[in-house]
Image 1 (cartoon, one colour):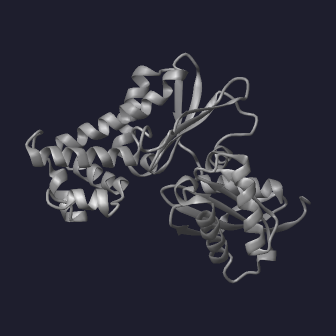
Image 2 (spheres, helix red, strand yellow):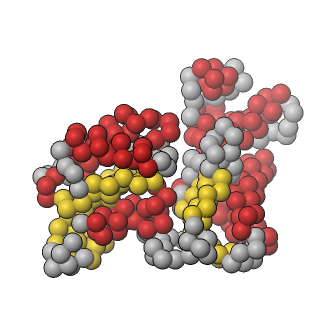
Image 3 (cartoon, rainbow, N blue to C red):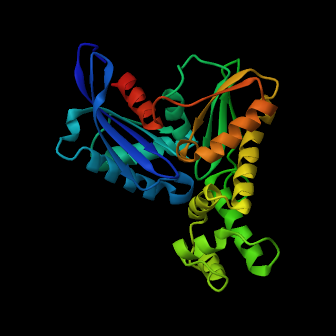
Length: 305
């Protein structure tokens, strides 16, 4: 990039909970954080949507974010995609996307890469990001600069403490309440009010109508804030499960940034989580990102332009 130039950049954070896209200007290699356009879109998870659907949605996101401009007014586009861990998958996405939008200045990254770029310098070590949204995973760069992945094995066998996990636990408490196997909880009434889930409909909705289990997490949080004991137990246990990501780092001094919708939107979970980490993992310093992950994509785009 010619440091005396100015132009426009696009950053995209395609997450499993939602997708954010930013169009902003830059001057002399510096991003203008005060004059930008940001739009929200439905989530993109490569593992669930597959390559063709991911490309289709990405193309639509780019088309909408540049509305009113010619795509050739954009100097560079960087996108982070949830689930796109393998380089060959990202290269394949880029190749087809370039053909569809007829624009080649674009790079595809894992969503973790843009999250790191929004928080840490590329030479930082002993640092990481704990992402808690629909899923949960810890990415950590050790003292040698190697990237270590902890958790994130998917909703069926892992993703403990995540939105999906909390939603599933909420549904579990509800069916136990239907049976009289646990104390009464306001979760059952809230599930019925918000999603029409009752003892007569829950099996059909979950197993046949593909009810999005992670949506039930909001009900659990709402009930916990209102003092429901069962809901509070779920949130406390979720905090415990998230903290278990730090077990392999127990002897390390590290800085970990808290990312994802559960940390940005749910103060109760973060309160319990911080207390647990302080007691069990005193060598770990927790920080909150100054910028959202989508700005990490913008940072990368600025370097590539």
